[in-house]
Image 1: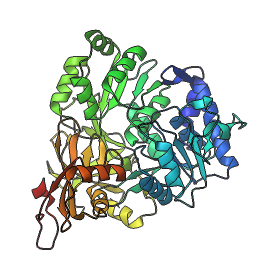
Image 2 (image 1 turned 135 degrees about the vertical axis):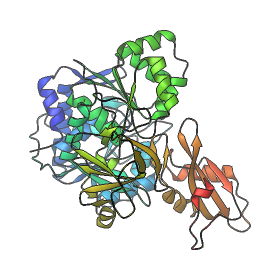
Image 3 (image 1 turned 180 degrees about the horizontal axis):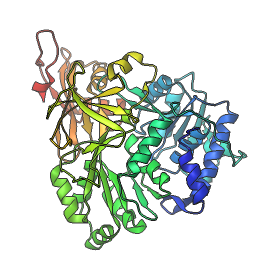
Image 4 (image 1 turned 90 degrees about the vertical axis):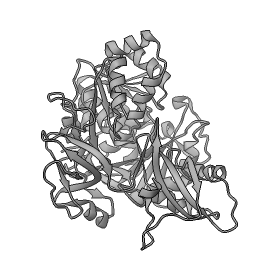
Length: 515
């Protein structure tokens, strides 16, 4: 048996009374988290959901996420985490494409009506049979605010608090994470129990460990970085996880001081925000006294941010590299070797990196070339997409689409992306999806989307648009329309109208000229 849920079960057995989760004034022990996860597993089984069935969850960083995540794994089901910013159309696509049978969805807030969006998306998918609403009021909720939606806590009532975990093979799928890779509609990367457990165990060796670690969890748990490197590594260590649903510098500083956080994982924009925030001197001193590990990933970390964080908080940021398809960690600036600013470090234990050309041929020396990865971390493939899988994986090697160089000591440095993917604030945005939806607008004749430099987000999304004849639509109107169609991190913030776009002789838009 190799079920990823052993992370929680083992921690609950050894440290049942230790705080597993902290959320505001709420503190949940490992023993209680295990109990609720067992109840979730029993609930799923009672609804006919078993090994290999897909269970979707849309929740910010709340106690609900690990409760359902581990409960589904215990039942032998496959977890499908969804971005909480998705719109109904996008939710329906993900539920349908993953063949989800059950969907746990947070009610949301006045600013983010996730429950309503989730209920609408669920209603469009015939194969998804069960919808459980995760109420914002928690146990105090007695009636569902959405007519017809079943409340999570009511469904859980009466479920047994013990459960015999379903046996799963190492190569059985544990999680399906959606990523567009480089082009087209989002694809589900199938990660096995072994993929994820090995990545947790190796990642654990990369960070200093304390007698009782306290991790700040502000990276989204629906994202592989937060899920593996923060939640799962933290539970593997029996750490206390301090949940922060939304990153806001002052709130993060407050909780870091209060809970004496010693490990922080974030994307570069988070570090940039902490660096530019006017933090009180006594708070800076308190954070510096407790913070021993700072980890960055998701996109390239600017050198000035790395230096600034060291100067302000007295901690070195450790930078690594990975993708959803690699569970995610593939390389890291290891603590036992010199850290090289700007580098993504060296391959982790059990993982190989090489540079290749378009024909998969190895590029020797410095490069540049596209990074290919082989090891225990590489996904099984894209769910129900054998052609896409064959394009991405050959002989066990996964091609990343990222171009890098390599120094004479084996350290890798990302220098470009071979495709057109945009990274906005640590989130991957795929131009083709944006372009295809933009062109459904009656005023849009042709659209090309590129990333342009942005001070805090790294890249911003810009659309170059040719309007239909006679159309007078404005930039503000098109941006407002896009805001309704896409998740908050996807829609173009800048629109430039043109009479023509630069193209090759075959009609391919020259995006490098637009950039």
